[in-house]
Length: 272
Image (cartoon, rainbow, N blue to C red; front, side, top):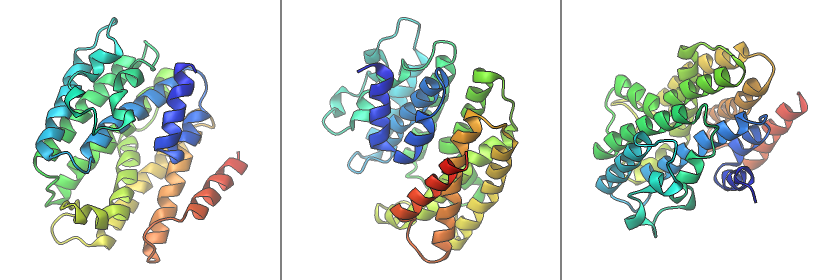
């Protein structure tokens, strides 16, 4: 099994939602986006780990950030994963194989992906140390930029690298923020059970949904500005699912049903 096929198999196991749009990307771009997604999923699994304490999370995330910053043209998979050995039995496959995902990206864009992942890991470490304490909308903006808005910026860089596509970077941030806010709106009860709330003081569920919709307007503009092609195809599925999830939450559902997810995806795939 070649590296790309193996990476896509792991991607399918970790996110069926993103597996579909990533697997349909053209050569070169598919490796870059898959590398970026798996790298960020690798550190996200550490941030969200159910049994690691916050201090351990921060230590591991900063270690991975430094590994990425120290990378050179001769770096090996083990160089990127250094520091994970002590927690090997508790970490998922996608995190332990972070070095393989780093080396999946084409040489001409890999350092940009490593830089984005290193910065995100540092930010995640900060949020773990303060137990994701958010009291104001400004702090919510900080968090959603840290873990998602910055992903929108990276995607814009990947589109530009691939075929020169130019995008509005403010809208790119809204794209990432909007998707993250939908995740917060969907998962806030589970978050509360683990002692974490991403709601600013005084906010209720309807307020976070309003925040999500406000950012999804930017995401809509971002996606609509893209010419027909791989970038637009990639953005349409997660954006449509985000809107459908908010609609379901407004009606009192806890999440979008699996059948509803399939219906949204099939409708988009059939319209191409």
